[in-house]
Image 1 (cartoon, rainbow, N blue to C red):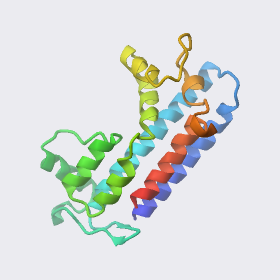
Image 2: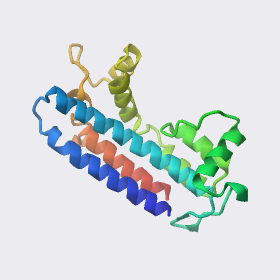
Image 3: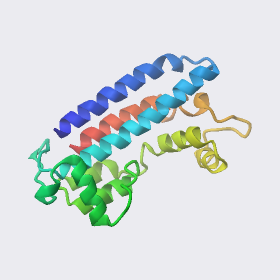
Length: 198
């Protein structure tokens, strides 16, 4: 079941990459293409967040299996469905809202609070520093909010010269370390980290 979640994430990431590929041709984008690329970036971040949530909650049900076999249930029998585990987590943490699954520390804390048997794999996979998907989150936040604070957070990455405008072409498409486009690196990181969680 957990490997099915990994496969589902990989299919989604591949589909988003295929949708983005024609836009990464190197030329300037028109406004409609820029919005499309921003939307794809949103979807990539959302796909990761949904995957992490489903992986951790499913791991608590007693119905999930990973590379080591069946992951034993870690919640009372009344909560052995994924969405019920979400309610149990809120009770245990005394929170009104679910954790911010895109934040490694929040996701690891949720896994620990649920006492899932595969917490060591989860923590090792998503607890790496520097977190390879943090730049994706900052980029997505700027595209979503276009606020001064989101711009300052993104500019702190030193991706831009003083006169450069923050846009898809200067955030998502450039080549980073190792000669890999940032979008490609984010897609690859999701696949590697999701497999490591198994």
